[in-house]
Image 1: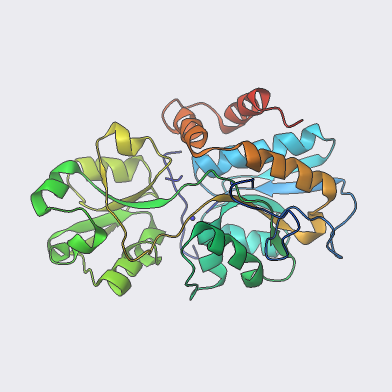
Image 2: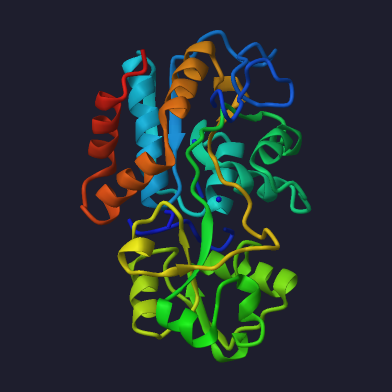
Length: 311
């Protein structure tokens, strides 16, 4: 799914926005969102626990969800900064949390390792069939945050790198680095090896799309890392995002992942209204305010809601 504190999600057992254009529930039986008429969905809930991954974007989105639901009179508990995807997915399945912001491509491949869909709408429509019983997604947002394999401009110029595929003949001379999950995920080093045939000289375990990875990249201690497309760090440091012709990175639109037993009509209506107002450009600004401006996620979320009334 830097994303991403400057961070994206990670930890060993190994992260976390429909609209007219993107499609959501709207009565579509293939889509997880919109329709709150499921047999197991409650007519009303009194409380909900909202979780997030361990990076700024996920925390801001979780705060937006939580504050909007609280404004509707629902008692909200928060468990933010849980960890990487493997950790928070376990938490929502064991009912430690009931709701969290997620990403379409990352959600699909987490539950369906052999997924072949690579277009945004196809990825979204494939998710319900991959989810375990008791979990659903609501409307996907047009806002998206994609994974990106990144190098400095100096490295790109030196090796004439434009695509991930261009790393294959020179990978043995390069050091990759990032969060621990970057080494093992299909969207990271493991996928680059399996799909592109790239072998790196070494892997350095740092932080997921965070300041340690950025410093190591700029200091040439590593030459390849992963950031996320809503991170201003890419543009601010004139970094180069390599093209991905083999699609190891799937579309990652923002989508709420929720337990069916908390999918009441008021929750669905509130969250889908948020989804419809999120934009990639706006999300990039929210992440920068936390990662660069050092504002708190709850303050940034409160400000966003004040400027984007839901009714």
